[in-house]
Amino acid sequence: MLKTVLGRPSVVLSVAALVLLSAPVSRAEEDVEHTEEHGERHKASHGGYFADAADIYHYELLLSRDGAWKLYLYDHNAQPMSAGPVNVRWTLCPDGEYPLRGDWTPSTDGTHYTAQFPPVVSDTIHIVIAARKGDEWHPVEFVLPLDGKVQA
Image 1: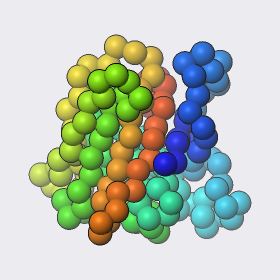
Image 2 (image 1 turned 90 degrees about the vertical axis):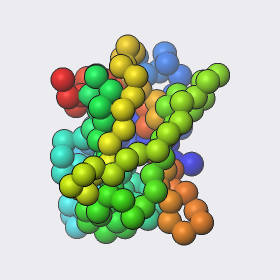
Image 3 (image 1 turned 135 degrees about the vertical axis):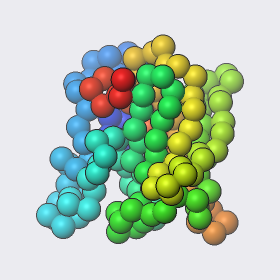
């Protein structure tokens, strides 16, 4: 499973290590394959956190402290996909004693998925998002600070 920490693939970090890290860097700023075209494809179009699930799907996650979150799904070429035809699920606090699990719901206009989470009281969020293609789920794990990219 790909781990995305502060917008970059990485190994799981301890809470102490998260405190020592600097501000997050968007995947768009870090050209994954060091080509201009690939870097242009990997941008968060809506100002959220962007991650690549093995170039099968791309996820853009928008957080809010009130728990109303949005997820934009992109194809392998990072082109927007309609919400609905693809099943997408989430796991909040996946390493915790009692992880929370659920499904993303397609928005009424079909442009994104939504989910309602409990209000966040922590300074970081740990979530796994996985979309299904055929018989396989394609997960990405985020460990993110709740700072400047969080909507009010």
